[in-house]
Length: 310
Image 1 (cartoon, rainbow, N blue to C red):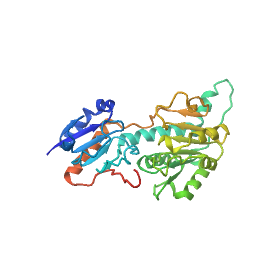
Image 2: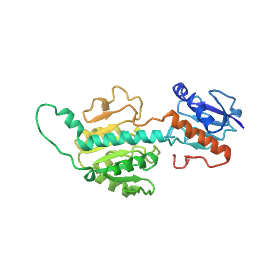
Image 3: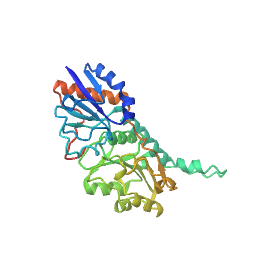
Image 4: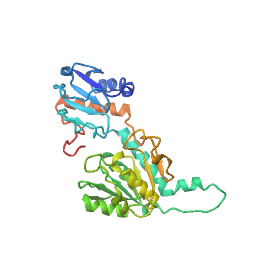
C-alpha cells in the first residue's frame, strides 16, 4: 500500500528530517511518499510541528492521524479543526537528553558548584554539601520525562519526591498527587524540577503563594514549559531571598527578549531551550512505527487525551 505523508513543519525541520524519515519508513517496510505539499484528500498522515504550513486540518478528511514531532502539544490540541487522532512525541533520545540536563543541574545546585567557581580568590573555605540521600528533590510531573528523571535521581540516592495531578507509582520515589500532595511536596523540597505539560490547570502553577511554601533558599529548575511559572513572582521571591536560584530553560516568549530581567539577574540561569531536543533518527523511528501500527490496525502509540490536553 502506497501512503502519502505530509510534512507540516518549519523549513529547518525539513532539512533535518527529509532523509531520516524515508530511511525509517523503509526500515519499517512502508511504501511512503514524503512531501511538503499535497492535495488534502490524498494525505494519509501528517507529521506536525508548530509554525508549519497546516493550521486548518478540516480539508484532510482522509488523514488517519497527526503525528507531532514535539512532546508538548499545547499549540495544537485545542485546534477545533483537528478531528484526527493526535499523537505526541515520546522519543528515547529526547528522554535521555532531558535526564542528562536535569541531573546535571540538580547536581550543580546540590554540590554548590557555582559557589566553588566564583570563590577562586585564594581563600581556603571548604563547604561540604550533604550527601544526596539527605537532599530532597521534587519532580513535578511524572509522565515519561518526569518519571525518567525521578528514577535517575533516585539511582543517585537523592531523596526524590514526585507529584502529579493523578496517582502515579514510581519505585524509589515518594509520589503524591492532588492539591494537598502538591503543598506537601513543595514544603519539603530543596530543589524543584518542573516537568509538567502545559494545560489550563498547570498554567502559572508556580505562583507567589506556592513559592512561599518552599523552604528558604530552595532552587527552582524549569525545563518543562515557560508558562508553568509566574515570572514576576519568581523574580520577587529571588529578590526577597526566599528562593535561592532559578535555572530556566523555557519561557513564555522564546527567544527570551534581551530586555527580560531574567538575563541580568544574579540568581537566574538562562539556557536557550536546550534541555532536551527531539533527535531526528530516533524520532523518525517513532513516526514510522505509528504509521506501521495504523496500517496494521494496531493501537497508536502516545495518543493524546483531548480532555486532559496531553
